[in-house]
Length: 136
Image (cartoon, rainbow, N blue to C red; front, side, top):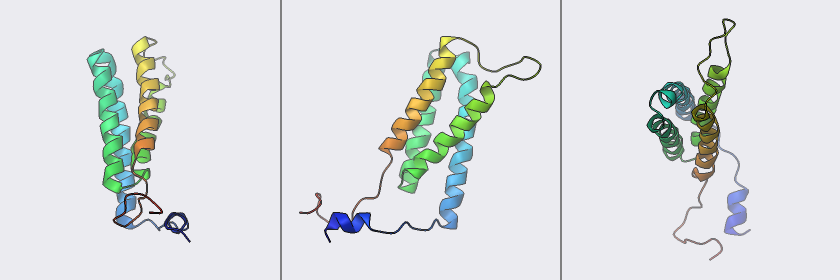
C-alpha cells in the first residue's frame, strides 16, 4: 500500500475530552463574535462591517490552527451562523436587530463566505515523514 493509501485508510480518532471542550468553546466564541458583529457592523459602517468579518475570519482560522483540523474552523463558524440567524428573526412586538440595508446583507452573506473559506483553508491531516511529496 502506498503512503497515500495508508493515510486514507487510517481510522478516525476518537475525540478526547480536551478536544471536545475546545470545540464547544470555539462554538460559544463563534456565537459571541456573531452577536458582537451584528451590533458593530451597523454602528460603524463600513469599518464595523470589516471589523466584524475580520473577527470571524480570525476566530475560524485560529480555531483551525489550534485544533489542527477543519473541525476547529467549522465549530466557530457554526456558532456564528446560528447566533446570526437567531438574531435576524423578528420578535412578536415587531422589533428586530438587522435593518433592511445593504450593510446587513453584506454582513450575512460575507460572513457565510468567510466561514466557508476558513473551513476550506483549515488544516487537514498531513502525512508524517520528511518527504514533501507523496509517493516520492
